[in-house]
Amino acid sequence: MEQRDRWATKLGLILAMAGNAIGLGNFWRFPYQLASNGGGAFMIPYFIALFFLGIPVMWIEWTTGRYGGKYGHGTLGPMFYLMARESVKPKTALIFGVIGGMLAFSVSSLLSSYYYQVIGWSAAYTYYSLTGAYFGQDTVKFFLNYVANLKAVIFFWGITMVLLGIAVGQGVSKGIERWVKVMMPLLYVFAILLVIRALTLGSPVKPEWSSIKGLEYIWTPNFTALKQNFFKISLAAAGQIFFTLSLGMGIIHNYASYLGPEDDVALSGLATVSLNEFAEVILGGSLAIPIAFAYLGPEQAIKGGVGLAYMALPNVFMHMPGGRIFGAMWFLLLWFAGFTSAIATYNYLVAMLEEDLKIDRKVGTWVVFVFLFLLGLPVALDSSLVYLSELDMWVGSYFLVLLGFFDVIVGVWLFKPDNFWEELHKGAFINVPEWFKPIIMYIAPLFMAVLLIGNTKDYYSMGALRFHVSKAYVENVLGGSYPDAVPLVLRARIVILIILIIGAIEA
Ligand code: PHE
Ligand code: NA
Image (tube, rainbow, N blue to C red; front, side, top):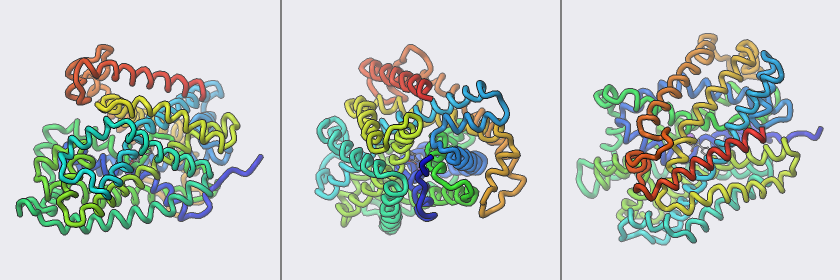
């Protein structure tokens, strides 16, 4: 058998994994989750979820991935099959293989279909910041006009996809690793420069709006809010942990499959978590909200929501000294962050073709390109963003947890807890303390079961689970107008279903 591609250097591997995890989730999603879930109060369930969910699942996915790689597999179907075989008959193991393969394929492709769009917006806004295109304009209108401008949307999304294709086509060590070695250090430099700029912003509008006040808001826990909305805030925090660490997607497993069978996973997994959390809590937390605070005041900064990065911040850059440069830096930072994550979902799909169907990587890369283009087109065509929101609801918060749950069932329980523990420590640079084992075995899956039930209830009460698409759901949850948005919601659901079926057949 031909030697499988492997990470060339330890540094390259760590940067690739950090690039995988550090994404729009850190700089775009985290700030508005924090702002809309009680500010500082959000950080309590957030850190709890990090410890009891994030770290355990990260270790499971690294271990599962390296194990699959040993047998020449970088995708979840074969990995789950191989591990489940340790305790059940091959036929039953096959069922777990199909579940894992189906979920990972669906998450990778559906997530890409809308996430790549948002990366495309960053490319556009980097350009618009440099040229000052939105300066002096109503930035909300500017954004809405942009997403309705098909030519521009497809152009910026298109170049992003072509570059992704080139990087992935070059392979793991010669492509992905080289690209992240350039992009990740730049990302940190940009982020640090921006944080310095952000924290030295007094408010030109009102002294009590300084960016430092914004930081205070983030870090002051609002216990009343937490008590009142305990369940909702906890769900959001755990969902953010999954999303930001790239858990439940199949892409951590995939990257780990390019390790040697004796390469450390215990310390490397922990390093991935630490690098991501530094980029999220310290860097991500000190950017969007404090900046918006200084110029727009608390109310606007907090209700900025999904649009904070693309609608509220441009309004700041146009008034800030050096705003073109800082604006461009902010959006290029988003673009790098998104790009180095997107590479991972793209590579997952290429690995499927390469390993399971024996299609040459170069050819596979462009097959995936066409596939992802077609899947992304309906998202690009919908300027109301209802289709995007519907996908994100299901994929971005629900499927991840479901896959994470099967991670523990297969990677720990069916593989057998002692085997898992031994595998985690093979070649390890650190010893995970024995008391952490029950957290991985019992607490993490229990936590996820509660999450799944909670999410299901939540979706039900919002009206997301009914066949009849309600007015309240469309208007309050997806932010569209009824009944125009109904066909979009139905279309999104049909696409999700088709992708799940293809995934099951493929696996
Ligand atoms: N962890 C990534 C983030 O924070 C999530 C992601 C990875 C999304 C890969 C899409 C593709 O943004
Ligand atoms: Na992240």
